[in-house]
Image 1 (spheres, helix red, strand yellow):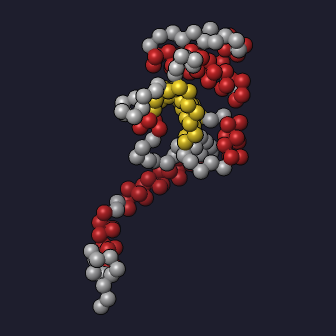
Image 2 (tube, rainbow, N blue to C red; image 1 turned 180 degrees about the horizontal axis):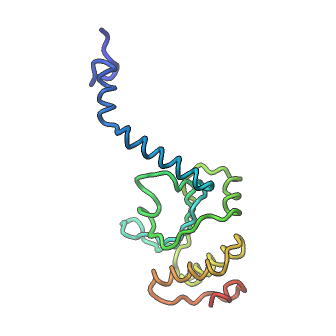
Image 3 (cartoon, helix red, strand yellow; image 1 turned 90 degrees about the vertical axis):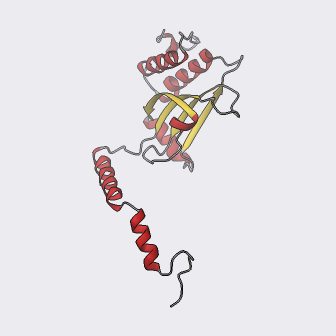
Length: 176
């Protein structure tokens, strides 16, 4: 009898037996049923998630402080390393607006995350970055001032002090 191409197994049956010993098919089936049930109840289950975070600086190669807007285009996928846990301390999350979602569909993304980084430095302090992010969300994507207030409070809580926003934008003046 010819040997199986993989040198660890004599026959395909041995390989298949070990495969079934290692794989928990019952758990996979239950997870699939739960996922299908969730998708039936939530028609926009594939809606991207917009996250606002601050770069974790525990790695020796990361020298600059950074505030980022991260869009997770595949929030339903389980992965080992995710932006929320590995690169950034996420301080606020929200579902993407219809306008953002349509914009993403047009670009046909191939990556899981879109990241817009703002490096904290002398020219761009935290106040200016947060003002810019809030203005962008309110003016371009039609989010409410209530969203801007929640985002501002999340940044203030994380930074540990009150932020003075750039009031040159009329939409931001209502937040103060």
